[in-house]
Length: 601
Image (cartoon, rainbow, N blue to C red; front, side, top):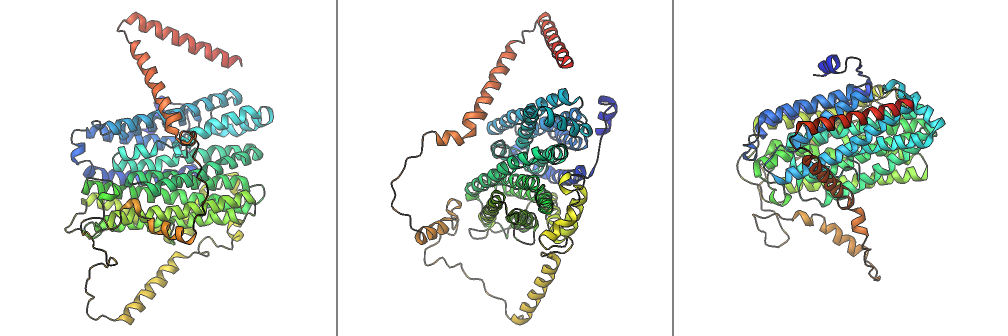
């Protein structure tokens, strides 16, 4: 399909596949293939019985082709065309359950928000073409350099438009408010592809434009936008992590987690830009940590969404209070979800630990006050990821007596989860090899120019072993387990006993701890340890809740405006051919006038 586009639709367009492209293209192809393996059995649910499988697979193929085309594009026109193919196809996939009004509303919100972002990208591309004379990626750094010298206001306007467009796709707060609505509405394999790889294409745009073109064209302006990226990244990590801790729906929890993890990656990108002039080695370390976290999260988040889909497939619910006690009845799903939960929580040696640890080292060791504070914020966001990962797994698979019977999902669904879990383990055991590959892929970026080799020495590391040596930890753990087994011996098997509940009668059918109160013991302990002084209660300002509710002041008004425009356009469909011809003439004249003005400028 990409070849046909290049031959017949864009014959003069060129395609590229540099290291940055491959860094994203490999996860896109792997996750898309695994999600396709998972989908046939999943779509046999009763809720999808009346939906067209032909529509699903056609849109899925267009969705994957759009992502691949976006990554292979070498000019802004082709990039935006493929970006729109990806967006429209994913919109149809989110709305796959056409008889579900909630799914259709979520899909409409996704459509409106992502097209606002696409509109920003298109407007920014047109402005950049007028100023620089080209859409080709290779010529854009020169255009940005010229704007930095002659028209800084125009430069930052264009960069702001690009940032909004990419941040909307990447799920950064508040632009990513579509994620908690779209993910629960979409089928699980679509959610896995959306959160695992499509969201990452927004971060690809950030890398390509801000850390590639802008950093090469105007390093001083790149530092300014590094602060912007870091601020929105940290805000997204904290808001997304906090919302995930409060979520009661497994897929909503994972959607907020996607906002948080995209925020952490954006924070790493921003730190790299800010540190580049003063601490090139730490800047390279921050970028490599963000790159590792990006690759790891693509696999881990896809795994967790497929696991959530398996829970819904078996139990008919995503609500955490309806789950629990499923670990023995769904062993494959349970073990793969355990691997994913440990990985996203950041426990060593699994994937998230390596990326977060490198970014934490880079920010804290910088000795720049604001950057170090951002590093502490990264640490807080990491602690939040521990909380919601534990909540997700415990509420889903433990928290009540084990259910009887074999309840695991069909073989192809289990195989998809096992493949992703194996990839998580593989990435975790050889982080140095993966980091070396990422360093090669990102080598053309100015942030890594001549600094990758010094990044490890900045924190006393070697890329292939370093302070974290997962294979050595595994060998040591196996050896310790063997010694413990030999010391205990192989006597009579231990007997199973009822769980002691502190003398409180237990309802063996209900959750032992309601997910809403999962962290109530911690809250109560902290309340006793740190008593709250008697202070006068201040009423929250009336403007506070509306101010942080982006649905109220941005997305709902935008959706209402879109409906009014659609109604007006529908009334223009009178069925009279002469009126249609008149509209076409008016549109052609308007487009011709716009082109004349642009060319004269």
